[in-house]
Image 1 (cartoon, each protein chain N blue to C red):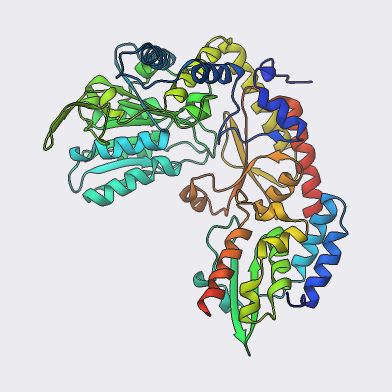
Image 2 (cartoon, one colour):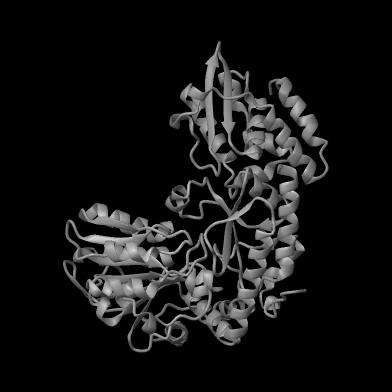
Length: 138
Length: 401
């Protein structure tokens, strides 16, 4: 296992220290607010992730062999979840991204219920889109 | 407690959910089941399962008897009398597909099928796809501001080329009873067939298909406190003559050769293969249970609870109720708050409600809403459930605003 990105380490420390659901929710919102603004030209149909309760756009680009994802959502909780996802994957190489167990990442953060199959919040759809983008590079 | 439910203890899952700190307010999606149903299904499986309508043996005779008893109970529940037949399917969706395929031969290019703007996907997509197959025109009746099908528009739109009208009795998003009598009269005047989707309506109050005078009435068992996997079609005798066989297989066949076969009339002719026997028997038990309740008391309870819900929502700043709900459920949005965020925080607090488009995407799109929150009630809910919901809502809004 390669070393965790810096942001991922910070996320783990923050979320593993959380006690109550209120704290967790507030922290999710804070992480969502830190998500960089997605360029307007990226908010197009082709980047829209289908299967979300709220609109989520996801774009991924390879720069010098490393993934840079950007995303946006109009809903704050999913924005926070997406921010946590990007914290784990941004900067990874093609091979590293393919090796990451994204569901397990949310388990480690204490957010496993957000990726359960019955959840329709859209995080699963985002994960799938990301896996799809990762596969296309293979 | 202001509005207690005398029937709460009859539904064992409610106590279990409460122990898990879950408040179940998603009853328009599916309902919890009465003990009577659990007993009936357990009794059936513990005393000898058998297939129906074929075997000579005793278990087969028992199963067939219980299965056919359920058919009688459903007919009684709808007051069908001898005006028509009850067909069992696998759900309201499969019933509507049966109709869309079984009636297809009646329609020619340019004929019109009429639905309404509030139909959920089950009463939209089968007709939409039928219209595509046969080059028919799908006409969508608009709603008025209160969330009722606009009768003036309907009088214009239900015309000489209308061959079929398919509308919901009670909206699963707006909680409005639709003006079925004038709508069905308009259809009848044009000689069009009528389909009433009772998926939500059947659960609230008693409905008489003879008074309603529709050709077909459709509902699913699981929303009416019965097992899932069972749907019901009531068809008027004259209308059933138009319905062609759709799914083929055992049970529905009369004579079979390698190259030709003849089929039974309704109801068995539309029940191909082994039906959901335990489910049908379970539905019969749920109907027995429901029949044992005082209908006036149930109606009064549901009305009081609905009123309680509506008042509580209207008392809160920024809450906007969709339409003017009359029964069963309330959908709402909150100004400046995304419904997905609200749903997230309500879920965290153990409130089981529905967020999103409620399987009626075109309606929400027409209202220019990305989604809404829906709270839907059942006879076992009480005002404490609603108080827990209100407290969770206040907490969530505190955090989000």
